[in-house]
Length: 234
Image 1 (tube, one colour):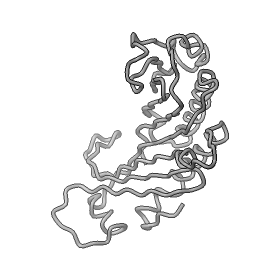
Image 2: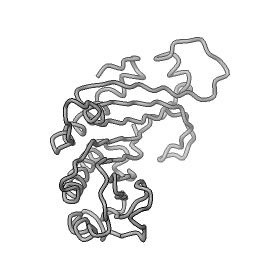
Image 3: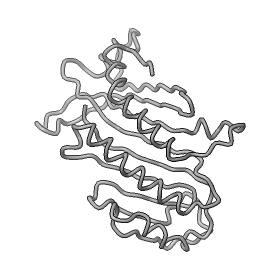
């Protein structure tokens, strides 16, 4: 399995006057990120437009903060790309750092929910990726199909677990050869808890840890079974 990228997102109620919070954000990010950049965006601009940008000290991830969300985008390379233990440790460290920063600026607001996703892929050498999915999961007689995409969604506790599989051509990073591949996009979020109106749900630190633990289990124990055994059981 090759681990390509990941993302961590926190969604919260709208924060007004973001520019005034820049010193707090810059200080909170500390040594994990390079000095934060404030963008010349008026406070009445659309909420989705980022106000602050920061880059990790190693240059492998970028953080964007808007009045309604904070999102970290990560690119795995070198030794990380083939070592999930390094990837999950990196995500755990960055998730804790960003959660602390978000908590420092939301004040009376709350973090509504969080999400974490990872994109990885398997190179298929013995047959085409489409044939692999057809035999192990779809199990239908099909022909003249040049691309296939599948999506599974499950609920567990406060979480949605979304897993997408898609056939894509890829290049072997070691040999440069072209191969068929199955790309996995795993997204785990606790929006289910947030949407439960009767629970007065707030995303706290223990939920972030639970999301990461669930992601770790899905990647290590479940992804292989989907294709090898046709088994999507959480």
